[in-house]
Image (cartoon, rainbow over all chains, first blue to last red):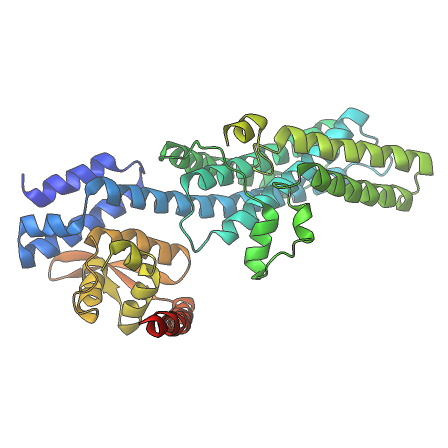
Amino acid sequence: MTPTRRHLGEIAACLRVRGRRRRRILAECASHLDEAAAVRGETAAVASFGPAAEIAAALDLEAAAARGATSTAMSAAGVALTALSTLVLINAAGPGAEAPPVLALAVLLAGQIAGVAAATAVLQALAQRRGSPPAAALALLARRNATGLAAAAATIVAAGAALTGQAPAPLLLAGPLALVAALAAVGRAWRLAGALPGGRDPIALSPIADLASLAGIRVPARLGTIDPLRHAVPSATLVAALAATAMFARALREGDAAGTACALAALEATGVVGCFVLLGPALGLRRARRDREAL
Amino acid sequence: MRNDLVRGHLDGLLLAVLADAPAHGYEAIQRLTARSAGAFDLPEGTVYPALHRLERAGHARSSWVTHEGRRRRVYALTAAGRRAADAAQTEWRFFATAVDRVLGAAA
C-alpha cells in the first residue's frame, strides 16, 4: 500500500460521518493526495496534508454543522406544516364542537412548546451559520429541533383525538409527513454531533444573544436581565406575565367572562413556568443544577 | 508564521484566492502559498473544512469536474461570497491599520 493510500485509510478510520458526505470527503482527500504526490512524491504529499485525526475531526465537525443547518430547516418546515394541518383539523370540526378540557390544554401547551423550541433552534442555526460551533452546541440544536417536532406531533395528535370532522387529506397529511422526514434528519444530525468529542458536554445558549448577534447589536445591560441564562427567575416571570396577559386578552376578545379569562391566564402562566423548569435544561435555556454545581 | 494566526483568517484568505478564479482544494492552497510567498505553511488538509464551511454559509458552491482523467471538486464563489470577500478585505484593512498604529508606534 502506498503512503497516500495508508494516510487516506487513517483519515477514513478517524471519520465518524457516514453516507454521501463521507464519500465526498474521502474522494476530495484522495484527489488532493494524488495531485500532491504527482508533484512532490508520496511521502511529502502525506507530510504536507496534515495529521489524519486532526483533519478528520475538523471535517466531522463541519459535516455535523451542515447536518444541523439542513435538519433545522426541515424541522422548522415540519413544525409550520403541522401547525397548518392542526388548524385545518380544528376548523374542520363544526362550530359547536367542544374538545375535552384535557385535550384542549394539551393542544395549547404542546403547540406553544413546539413554537418556542422551533424558534430557538432557527435563531441558533442562523446565528452559527457562518462559524464553526462546538459539538455540544450542535447537539443542543438537535435537541431543540427534536423537542419542537415531538411537541408538534403531540399537538396534532391531541387535536385529532379531541375533534372530528372532514378536511382534504393532503392538508391533513402534509404536517405529519413533514414531521417524519424532519425527525429522520434531526436523528442523523444528533447522532453525529453526540459522537464527536465534547458532543455530550452540558451547554446553554441564550436565544437573546443569538437574536442580538443576528441583528448586529449589543444588548444593553438593562435588557440583559431578560437573558434566561443569567437571570432564570426574572426572565421566566416576565415571559409568564406576557403570556398570561396575551391569554387574558384573547379570552376576553372571544367573549369569555373575566373570571374564566383570569383562570386561563393563570393556567398559561403556570404552564410557561412549568415548561421552563422542566424543559429549560434540555432546550439550553437554563443550566441544570448539577451542571451549575459542576461549573 | 504561527498556524493558529493563519487559521483565524483562513475563510477570508480562501475567499480572496477563490475571487481570482474557481479552484479545487489543492489549487486553492497552492495559490495561498504562492500569494503569501510561502509564509502560510498550513497543513493542506485544513483547507477542506474551511471550503465546506464557505459552502454551508452560501459563499461558495462546488461541483465535480474531470480534468485529464482526474476528478476534482471545484469551488467557485457565489454572489454572496464575492460580497463577503470584499467585506473581509475591508475589515482586514481596518484591523491591520489599527494594529499597525499600535505596534508601529511601540517600535
